[in-house]
Amino acid sequence: MFFNRKERAEAEAKYRDRLPPGQTVTLKWPVLHFGNVPNYGDLSTWDFYIWGKVARPKRFTWTEFSALPTRTQVSDMHCVTHWSKFDSTFEGIPIAEVMKYVELLPEASHVMIHADPGYTTNLPLKDFLDEDVMFVLKYEGQPLEPDHGYPTRLLVPKLYLWKSAKWVRGLEFMSGDRPGFWEQYGYHMHGDPWQEERHGTYVVETMQNVRANQ
Image (cartoon, rainbow, N blue to C red; front, side):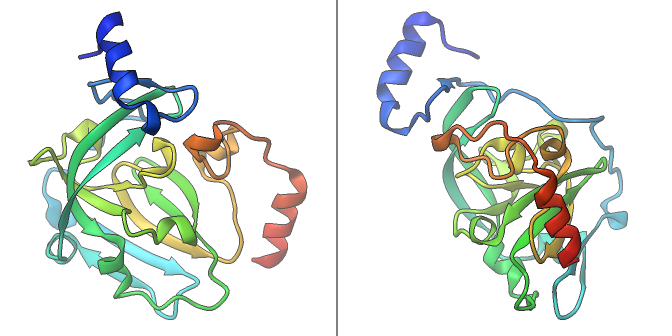
């Protein structure tokens, strides 16, 4: 539930040092996404691809992916729509465990996250490889609900939540940056809540530079 006015004031006082500018505290995890919620049914057909600026492409089946080592962590979430939720418990696969199967080429600098249904979002490698980034399998001890990304979603706690793509299906490593779905519609290319990087102009010159490097 959302706080009433008194409870919200108390919560915002409690989390004052952890609340980015322009955000309000909520107890609820609101559901926001583009497109319909995928229905996976039999996960024997689910797979996860890694390609782009890597020495060799890699494909995981669900059995292989879900068998990777997991850990539990407590993280905050900050949505570009101005809500923040604190101290949520996630269980998932640390990025480091996936990257054991990936040999990046020297020119790799960014990654495009590919997700269903046709969603993408971009990240610099320095953010993607942070130790608190994971592929979430469980929230508060339970498997993810379908509308929160079942069977797995990305979690990038340091950036706005649109970077934490639901229903992830692949990683495309890139030399240079390019915009994902929301970034093409004016969302910031980076998305740092503490800098209020909500919206930004995607400059034509940047696109030209990216194309020149492809």
